[in-house]
Length: 220
Image (cartoon, rainbow, N blue to C red; front, side):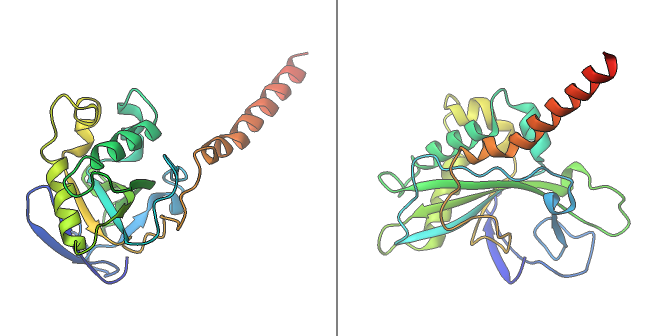
């Protein structure tokens, strides 16, 4: 991550962090080195999808929603549906926040990462986070800070009966929203279509079929 960023956290306070420094044992979001898990082959390729077509390029802002203390593995194993359905529920709920009704808001990517601290052989649960890339259309005269404040306020005051709170409330226990993409490079200009997820599993299916064939031949 390059440069400074200001985040709205679930405690209502703002925190500024400058990533890329070499210091360790700092709080999440401070001067600690973050490593994308999939780059070190510790996480799978990040999911990307397009829910309802691309948002308008004009007057749109890119945001990052951070789910700290959460990993993609835990998210996937804890929910009784696909990660894509979690993103759709998140997207639909955020579209109901103040200032976004009638405006486009798309969840365009998701990936997991962890903080690499000196002296630790493996990252602990508190060092992990899931990052969701958002693209939100804004109305004229509304600043990015206002958009972030509205989205964060909505997420921290969800109706208990809404789908996002009922099914995925555990994932939102430590949520924050930051402007920009924080150097992750994960959000494309145009979202990848949902069918690309099927392409991710095609090599696995082919490999499994080939392995099964070898076992059958060996047993014959």
